[in-house]
Image (cartoon, rainbow, N blue to C red; front, side):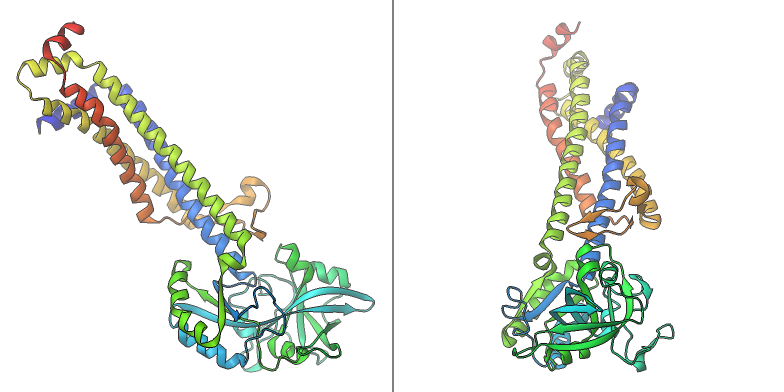
Length: 429
């Protein structure tokens, strides 16, 4: 108890020095807590937006399809494959979505443009897609779901042709409006003559991604299969997760099915390497910031400890001369460091958590801050990010700072305990 009282008394005796060091630690820890939450929240937003842009957390396809995405490499018997995938994924996957992707020529009047077409099941696709869902549609409507599942806000086709939706830039290039006829021409499965089919433009979407808005078309899966001659084949089955952290577990769980069906699986990190690199670079920047903050905090504490020890050689000499043990001196110095660091870190955490709570509920609007939208890995990010703190990471940082504080204080404390009483008293007399 004596060591604790002496440590606290010395910190309070030098209020200016202790307060200055504490202010540095409090401010840096508060900022670090806030930045950690915004960084992790930003990473989650980047991943969620990315996987909704025609990807998925895990994408199943026929062997070799990732290198050669042609109609010759399809998963046969799509409905059966879909059910098998759902059964294999169990509760890990929140949704499994079939898609048929192919290259086509879109024509309206005299205008022709090469596009990528995606056949989808609207009832399954719209809840997990950010390409042509209700939020992305700027004119018209999303692809209608089958009549039995249709919602009241969907408009029926006026021409009797199958519906189709496409990107805003593509609509301008083709000079088409809602209700106009758009013809798709493809090289069907197995070769032979080109196949053509007419569609009614049902909706125009805007994602903010040039490649999608200028060259992307979506149509019902059944119509796509008929046009390409794919029967019930699909290009891929996209699996979505509620928690991206469960991806390794899902990959492991799907392995027996992949081996049995000769399928391959691509995680979103492989399917979207640019986005993955953007997330990794941002995480590396945050890690560098954490290192800088830790260095600043530990350096501030070390400076305070050294100054305190240098100015108290006479005091320590007198204590040793009066019979205090060297161990008491060592404990006093260490406790001063831990009290200063611990109290300051706690206050910094409280301030940082208050800021985190604000950004977790209200979000941070980057367009208001920077005046423009943000893009990462070719994906236009949402305007508003929400803070997401990982308690274990935050606790780890605080614990590391405390351990480093103890470590850098060991040498000054040891030297103080090794002082010779008479020399210390004479030197500072």
